[in-house]
Image (cartoon, rainbow, N blue to C red; front, side):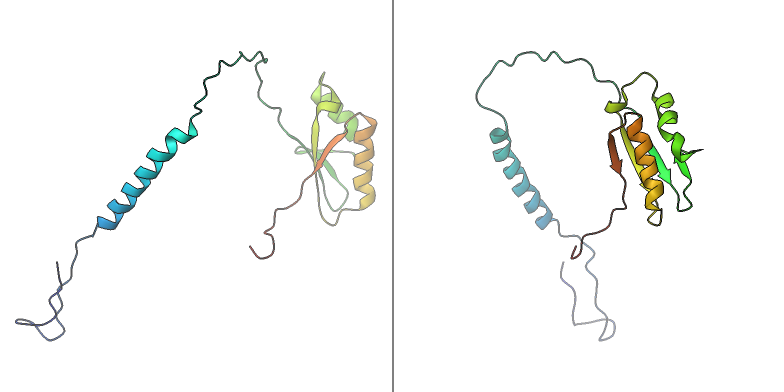
Length: 147
């Protein structure tokens, strides 16, 4: 287990390598983690026995596909991947959602940072005129300073 530092055979710089892995620290850490989980597991389960009522909630369907409106710097608008006129966005969106209530839909707006404010407001007005009031603005995630 030890390296041969001096003594017969070879030159003065000939040192034999120890190629065995010491697993003792690994086993120690695993035993400590095992003890921690054995102590913490009973604390995580509730000790008071309660008979809970049955939940009578309707089955949830898959959430609807998010609706994105993109506005380019040139003022061109896209509903999903398809181009649409700025003043027609609300009516196109109403046709797309069908019979669902427009007030229940969340619309995500992606606009370039150089988009004219007037173009953005034209989209917002068209949405509100057609009953779409839940609008979210999409921005780019950046790291906070100092992180």
